[in-house]
Length: 325
Image (cartoon, rainbow, N blue to C red; front, side, top):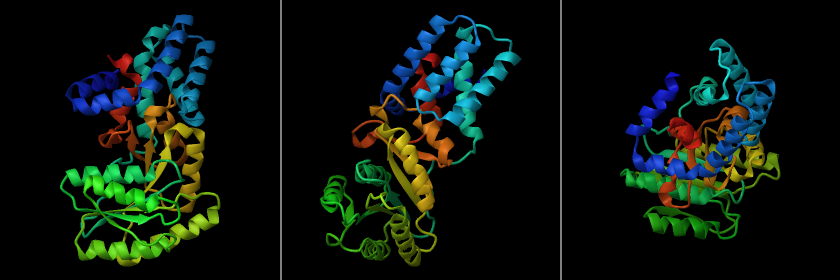
C-alpha cells in the first residue's frame, strides 16, 4: 500500500491553497462517487461478483472511460486474489493505488508547458465555442505575468461577435498587450502581424486565440494548417504548444471533441474547464484513455487563480479525500 501512504505525506507537505482549490473544485465528483461507494460497501460486506459489477458501473458513470475501467477492474481483481482480500472495507487503498498507476502506466507524459529557450514561446489555443477558451488564455497569461514573463495575446478569433472585445478587456484586466485586427479579418494575417510584434518587442510568451468551429472538419483542418504554417514561418518550431480547451461538464461530448481536434491538428495538451461544475470529474482519466494527450490545466472555479496546472497526485486526492484522511 505504498502509494496510499505516499499520498498522505504529499498532502501534508503540499501548498495548502492548491490543495484547497483541488478539494473544493472536485467536491461534486467526490461526493457523488464517495456516496455511491459507501452505499455499495454497506450493501456488500464481502467481495462478490455482484459487488465488482456495481463498482464497475459507478466508475463508468464518473466518465472515467470504459477501457480504463475494464483495465482497472482486471487489476483490482488480481490484487484482491493475490493479497487474499475478502472484505470490502479493505479496498479503498487499492482503488486509489490502481487508478493512479493506470494513469501513469499509460505513458508518463509531462503536464508542464513546453517553453522555447530561444525567443518567444508560442501557444495556440483551439476548441469549440463556449468552452471558456478566451478566459482560459487570460488566466494562463495572468499566471505567466505573475512569474515575471512578458506576455502578448493575439486575437485570432475574428469571427465570433465580441471575441476581440472580450480578449482586449481581459488584456486590460491582467496587464497584457493584445494584438488584434479588424472583425472578419483573415486570422492568419492577424496572427502574422502579432508574431512580428512579439519578435520586435521581445515578448517571452505569445498566447493565440482562435475561432471555435468544429462543424466542418475539413475546413477546420485547412484553417489550422494555414495558421500553423504562418506561425512556423515566422518562428521556427512554433507553435510550441497547441492547447485544446474542453468544457468538463459536456462529458462524453468533450471526449469526442478531443478525438476530432487530434485528427485536425497536433494537439499537445488539454485544458479542462468547469471541472468544479460537474459530478463526472473522472473525465480526466477518460480523456487520457481516449486520446493519450496530457491534461495540462484544470479549471476548478471562476476566479483567475482557480485554473491550476494539472497535478495527478492532487487530483487523486481531490477525488478520494475521504479515503485518504
